[in-house]
Image (cartoon, rainbow, N blue to C red; front, side, top):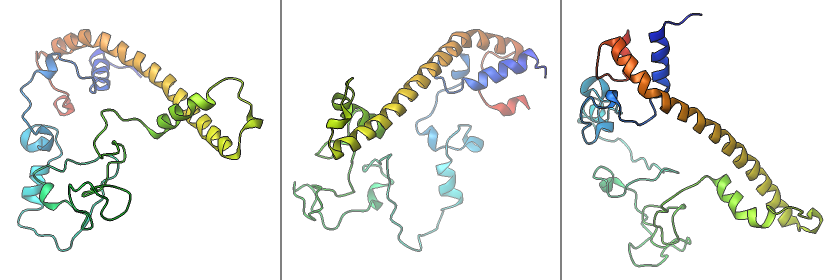
Amino acid sequence: MTFRPLTILLISATLTTGIQETWAQTAVKDVPKGWHMLDQQKDGFYGIGVEKAYQSLLKDKKAKQLVVVAVIDSGIDTTHEDLKPILWKNPKEVPGNGMDDDQNGYVDDIYGWNFLGGKDGRNVTKDSYEAARVYYKFKPKYGKSGLDQATLTTEEKEENALYQKAKSQIESQAKEAGMYVLFLKNIVEKLPSSDSILRKAMGKEIFTGDVTVFR
């Protein structure tokens, strides 16, 4: 199969859409606040179309029943103007009194609990996967060379097995990530020249990643 030079360049450009660099194609116009809520067809921005959904799907409609949605993993902004008035609240907990009123082990768990935060419920500045947490937790104990398996208790053997599993996963991912970094580095180094060639081939100084313009 033979590709024309322009086709090859377009494929290369498509592979690099996730790289946030400031070349000509990123300077089309200022991105408005809340662009991610807009609609591509109506507003020209690749958002999720929330405002469009409000106007076309949810306008003048009322909920027929109460639905409680539990958010797992990503978290939410409890001060958001759309969420604040409808957030579920723990009826057995008294806000801000510093006590575990419902005796479930969590103090002031009004909206739920942030299990990746500190003991006081506040956010952590950095997060990691469970495998990484297991790996670094048990590495000082089981990561030493010459570990005598025969001296380990039943519980320690289970911990060591968990550590070895996490170690295999972490080291494999680290190797893969290193190769991916080299791949991206190569793309970044070649992108400026590809950008200039694309502008010349299309006769445009400013262009976007919208594939519909090539149809």
